[in-house]
Length: 134
Image 1 (cartoon, helix red, strand yellow):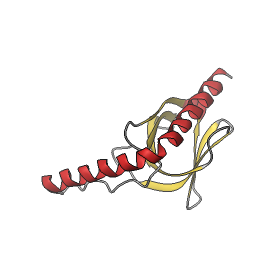
Image 2 (cartoon, rainbow, N blue to C red):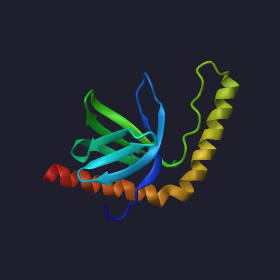
Image 3 (cartoon, helix red, strand yellow):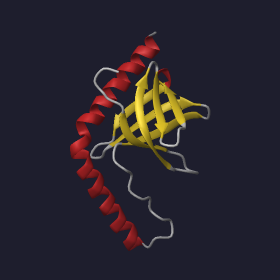
Image 4 (tube, helix red, strand yellow):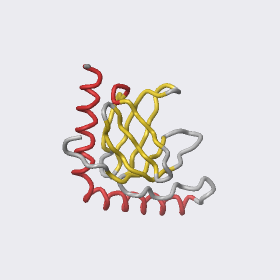
């Protein structure tokens, strides 16, 4: 890959039933976006199957919408460790406080990581265009 090094990220598959985070490394290899988890698990997303890729404004998060075995899937890559998810049984006060802290944390990390994430978006888009055109 040209301008983007392999980066440490946290992958979160955006599903209703389970949204567990997995730490690892993200890289572009051949025609795939490859996530290698710290425990050795490998997730490959074919660039030809990528429908949309974007950086979530104001946060260090890259989202990829792609085709998968179960149809269209959404995967988020956090370039900073994701904050804890809200507990369903938390009081309204705790939910607001947690949400504010999460937004503040992600905003602070975004300032440092914005150029890196923009480069990833550009490279994935170019790779996806090339894979679909081939």
